[in-house]
Image 1 (cartoon, protein in one colour):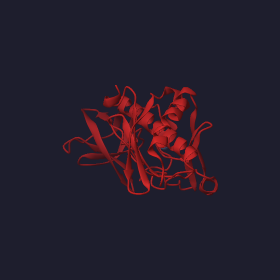
Image 2 (cartoon, protein in one colour):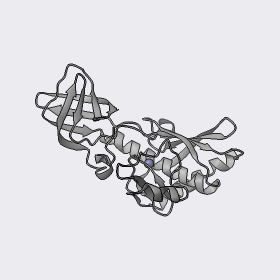
Image 3 (cartoon, protein in one colour):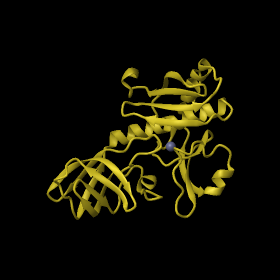
Image 4 (tube, helix red, strand yellow):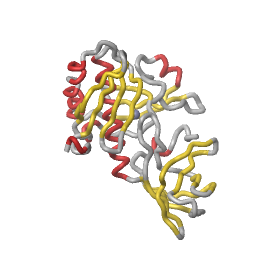
Length: 247
Ligand SMILES: [Zn+2]
């Protein structure tokens, strides 16, 4: 399982770490500490490397178990042991932070402009795009597309992004805080949940990684909107200069 207050929540900028192998099996290791985000809530898992005395390989995935997070290695024939240096791919993490922040901005603007419409799904891609599904029966797609202006206003206004752990019962009392059970992080063992706040715009439960402020985000473009059934609208966004169709 993911530790309820994982390293990347406290040190989102610390991407290289000396740590120790605490358990190993063919093609996988458990580490004492890990800077990797293992995926979840629509955000893709980090990529990176692990180096040890006598070898180096790529971390190709993660597997959550009762013992902790297994880091899966590119080969089963390697046996990292003892002290290791792990490194997260910084440019991939940065792209995920940008996309994740963009999905919060989109979520907030739709929530505010469409009567508290809820998210029913979210997925980011390695190509600088993301899609979000909203429960929006009867919404006019032209009006939905027009929120692009408000998305980029939020970037221009350079709003601070912060996070805090609050008691779960307080989170349930605050309107709109838990937008989507499937993307909200599990509560910690002491009954708290992580809230990510974009100052003056958005507060919601989330376990992912984000920018420190909206001003460092590339411009967000709405690429297209699909109707998915009678209730759902699927909104595709892309980051200007990141997504190939928006270069
Ligand atoms: Zn988030």
